[in-house]
Length: 150
Image (cartoon, rainbow, N blue to C red):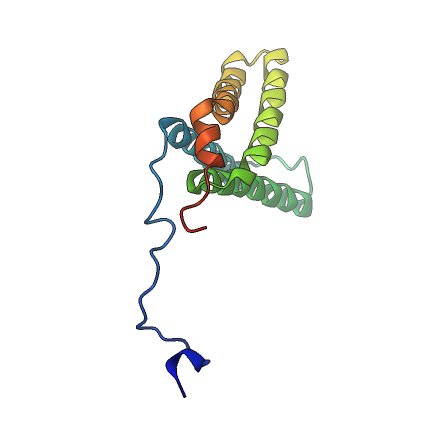
């Protein structure tokens, strides 16, 4: 039986380089976009868990409070995941990231109308910067290039 006819994998065979190691150089815009999405997602997940543990007031029942925390944590993880997908060059992550950032921009205006200008700016400025970075030429070109493994 020849080695190429064997069904068991050959763990000592030479392997092609892994995609992350052989990554193309990323433009600064992709790095900044990754950091914005990562920090937004991490802050949202951390804030949801911390506020659930620290609050005494029971506006919602226990089950609703847990469901809300799980929803916020999942949304934060989606932001982090989108950041990593864009960092790795997945062009399909650009549209969901844009939609999420547009939702954050809309949410920021509720803080402005409530008189919380600093909080509104903290939401608006990173989301607006992320939206701009998603559509500038270096990001578009880098995300549209074919993967060297293809």
